Amino acid sequence: MKNFNLLSLVAFSLFFVGTSATSATLAPKNAKAYIVSPLDGAKVKSPVKVVFGLEGMGVAPAGVKSPKTGHHHLLVDVKKLPNTKLPLPADKNHIHFGGGQTETTVDLEPGEHTLQLIMGDHTHIPHNPPILSEKITITVVK
Image 1 (spheres, rainbow, N blue to C red):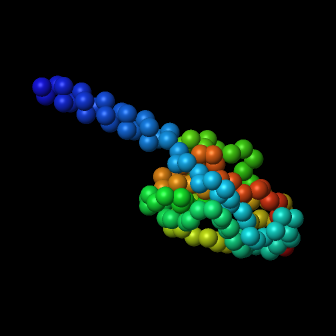
Image 2 (cartoon, rainbow, N blue to C red; image 1 turned 90 degrees about the vertical axis):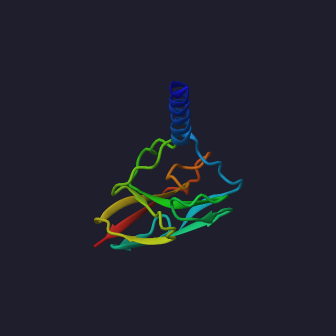
């Protein structure tokens, strides 16, 4: 009997881990992320203030599972989207706003940069389908 219970527990754990790592939260219909500012093509000075916009869903901190919510991630100079079935990476090009922030300032070197938002669910996994803003290009001047 102990072996059966242990086997059942292991099987349940593997199922739970396997599904939670790959199960994306469904995106609310008509949800849209966008960058309020700066505008595409803007010439700005560093640090750059970036204001996030969101329609059709709410913002909730990471770790808080609530229907039709998520939190922002800012992609800076990202050429290829990360795997949207896994939690988004966290580094200087993939900036998490797990506290539910809706704006930030980023230090950028002079030159051309791209900015894009992607929403993550309570576990930092993008929704299905991913909720992405348009990618904008800005130029940082001295």
